Length: 442
Image 1: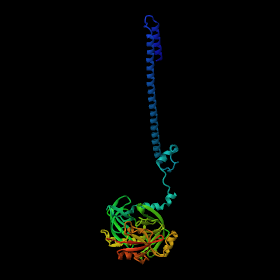
Image 2: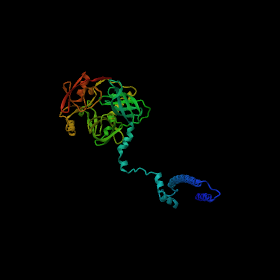
Image 3: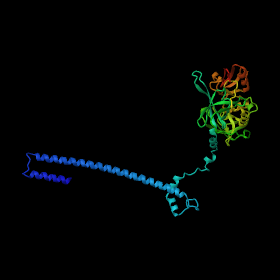
Image 4: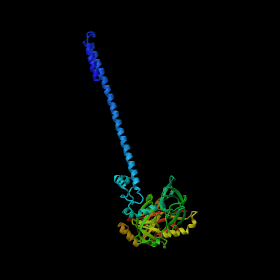
């Protein structure tokens, strides 16, 4: 291009110097300047085009280099993994260790240690503390599928919409849908809905109930087989054994707590229960509202009790599994039809206070009221007659219809014989009078 411009300059110079080709005035100078500008513009355009082409070519070369890197990396990784797999298959007759095989094999083992690492993850160490001592997790993993969450449904007094009145727990003892729970959980024969561990919900009906032992059974119509829990021998339970309590406290399904057996045979008369031939299992495993009816499980994964009541933190009671098994044997012919019951209830769970229990409660809570006897209310069912009357957990019933109360049997007698119940309760340092009207239920 520079040569051409030089030649053009020479050509115009020759024209300017030749007398035969002379333009009038200074037109020859203007023509020369215009030609020069045209050539410069074209030169600049060419430089721009050449620059862009160079950028495109450079970008293409960069993409090609990146593509080649990925191809080489993928090929190398595939080759390494393939060789690693082949090297793991030791020749027949040689010991299966890294030093086995011929020289080529040993060489590749040294060159490709990462290939073997990528192919085989190290196995779980069976000797690690986590795998040796996590026995409670193993029990929960086996038992959890058979534990259910129970909802008691009712109608809202104003909107008449279906609402959850109370909740509880239970566990499946038969693959065809038989569930064990507490009698006080399904009190009143309201609509009962069961939530299985795998997420399925279904309605249940009451099969059998024993108010004296606080045991009840439900049945659900679900395609078998269902996971079940095996009942153990509660007579063989010893104080100090590890136990796991499972259930749905405060509607929190599949909640697990653990503890030990505090007493394997706590006589019912110490708790103010009318059934004098029933011994309870006392445990310090945390049990709260909603745990009732859930299983108390030993380290063999067997149910040794049904969580029934909590007095305070660290003092809870379960119905022995042997009594549950006796109840199941007595009601095995009642599987196909519900068993109606006629009774009146006020919706509370009570505990008789005796001197030893009062002393233990005062050790745990220095602010426990100064009483020598009475009935401790530790659970009140929502929307029940007692709930409507203003009874709250922690109240201590001193009198019922003007008569001193010494055991829970006095309350049962008053409920069944009187249309209304006037209770004098100790709440903190105050005595309050409440009137409860028992509800007649089928």
